[in-house]
Image (cartoon, rainbow, N blue to C red; front, side):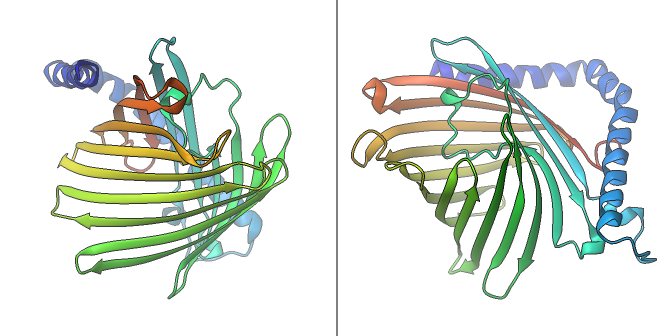
Length: 315
């Protein structure tokens, strides 16, 4: 328990010091204001250039404000796994608005996709050879489902073209409960065919608490034994506009190297504090129990510092 509470006490102490000594934080925000604005303006200009490349006809209804929702995100992380050295990671995402294409298209450049149900903290090593995705996605909302198609290239030592199709159906407020079912199908040259089927049941109690039960089934065609069932339960708490907590219990059931059996349990607490609307810190302690270690308790820890480059980051 001490291992779980100590990081929260530490991060809270940092917040208190920031409130008592605002000069450093305010100086940092003031000194970087022009840089954040320049970066966001560059992303807006890039959106406009790409949009005009696909459709070079002049449209008097479209101006700079139509591209203002384009944004960038950079997230730096420090990861500590029990009995291992501290390692570091980073995540980058740039999303461009394309209003001439009726806003159904998005051009996205991002670090390799993260699935928090499969990408556990203790498995995340120092990321020196990041994979990045450059993809054009098309999204449309039909009466029966939300449909999305994404075609792109994974930028790695060997380029890996891919196509991803997604379908998602949501039922809101059915006797006070929200339901979601979805299906993703991804085909790539290197990893071949991958499918993910999932459902989520969510209950919102009030403006501060909600309970979510999420389960996904993952299948990988290129491996003879690579199926995973990933059930999880999440209690989300909104303390106030700047502070959010998520309490999670996760399991991993797979048939890799064995018959289908439970390989991992974990208890995780995620605390997110927004210093500004565009600047946040995460503290994520986790206790986990893995099949490889005879389900002996171990811990892992992750700290994130995230910064958005959007229209809120320099106002």
